[in-house]
Image (cartoon, rainbow, N blue to C red; front, side, top):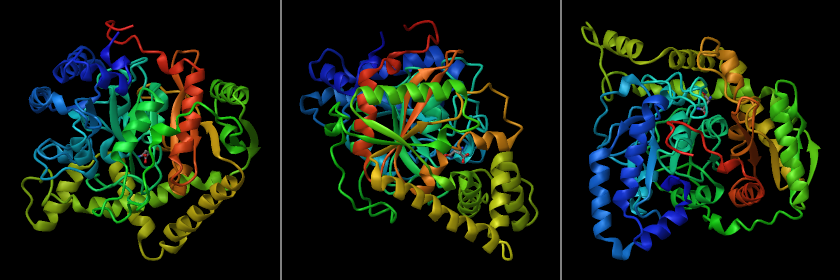
Length: 490
Ligand SMILES: NC(=O)C[C@H](N)C(=O)O
């Protein structure tokens, strides 16, 4: 058994009782990375020397170890800026961004809580993708079967946790990038309410949709981590000044009387039989625990995918304008004029998917098309948000699958953007509405690949989402299964 099979709270107890040291934990992490990372490619950059030094320092000061994440090793998605530690956003454009000058707010919070950053996690370039195959580095692989993708864009964040390289990690979610890889890798991933967690220091993809969130092996750890990173930040004007509850206190195990809505659009055509059956079995489990469920409709769901690709690409085209070869990242050589230098740096620096989105976004924003595409998409976004609000007048949570199918094979969809985009059909509406959503393990396919259950809550009601997720976890064993990767673990 690995140390990382313990919950964060249990690890802290062991640290407290001096059964283990912070150095033991950090060494366990790097040992496991050495064993399996060549196979799964979860990390882009390791922080070995600094992490070991920090562990030694923390071991010295252990007497007053009451910081929230004291000594617990974490992996951070590589679009979250870390001072002095290379931050690439999965792009070779930023491969030389070795020494960022500041920490993202969430990283400051992790540091204040005295966690130890093990390294930066693999991702699709600038968070655009659903399989990790768009990483400029290596494509991360699914620990349950390395012929399969781990999902994306926070593929590395889900893989590192599922493969036992770190006990918990941070990802970011614009259209499903935390929940979809969490579902594919059999771990727990939460996208918080928009505004719950500061985006300061998150390399922006689509600013009105991006949120940072926790990926863990169980719901309690997830709630614990969200408590640490959430909260208002004056450096992010979209972060909400709303009190952060103690999420761990909402894990009562009691869902008696909980009112669940199941959107018929989420179990429709395109959702595989195995996934449907797993979700139906989960609903039965909730019934047994005293919750009730009813079918509802989110009628504008069918427009969510096109709305998302218009809005997120439009925002990306503006956000990514800053990568011009001047201020950040690589610069094209041999350019003759300044304009030529901009053009060549961008042509050489960005991968195909990023270019596709920038072109789509620029087109949607251009005069003559703006009203027909961008403005229209904004209006449809409001309709989608209203669908959710209407359902939440009568229900506490919405439950459905996280993804239409379990993970697919590496290479299967990489040349077909439309089928790749369709992966996020059940996660995207949640970002458009700005509400919180979690994915938790709820079964396995015939091929032994994990299936994820999505639980969606009201704005700023992560507490109820966690309570529902935790109760299901307590009643089932899916989260206790481990991939047999590397042979060394059981
Ligand atoms: N970034 C995300 O949340 C993932 C989504 N698959 C996208 O490519 O936009």
